[in-house]
Image (cartoon, rainbow, N blue to C red):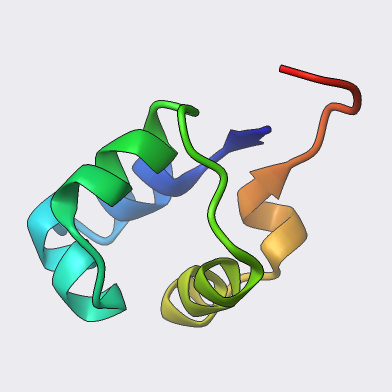
Length: 67
């Protein structure tokens, strides 16, 4: 699954560390999401959506099939 977390974070001018703190996850989690190595849980996806004030489908792009 692709995502726009890195782009949206850059638009808000916040660091990975700052985003991680706001979402109560580790910086490594943010790195993994941004690099497409980790798909967040539904709960975390909602937190990211709330933080960026955007729909989950605007942030995470499902391409279908396996990675």
